[in-house]
Length: 114
Picture 1: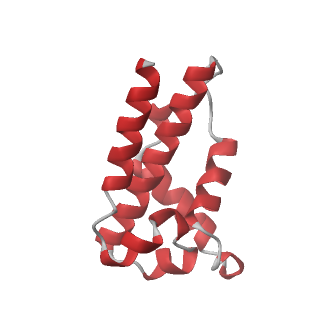
Picture 2: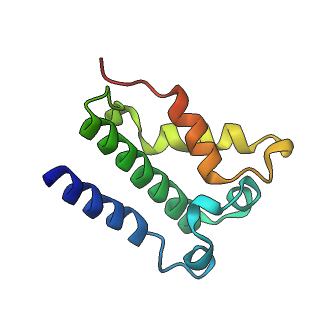
């Protein structure tokens, strides 16, 4: 029960970081596309990365709750995330790729605890 409460709190915190942006308030940062990332100003990029970090944390908590190896979140840094997003979004063929898809691709390759 405690894990579910923590999960809800962290999820709420993750969503609240971008909910006040006019552009992403309705759209949601996870639905932003690489094209949006490439045009985004500094604050908008922070909102996208904050959402991604919150989502990754929620996925981590779910793995912990299930008793599975969880992500090594100490490696999930701002610089690492920015590097991965920039690499994925640099390809013009990925311009319509959502940030959720980018994140899920990152998480499939991300190291887990042993």
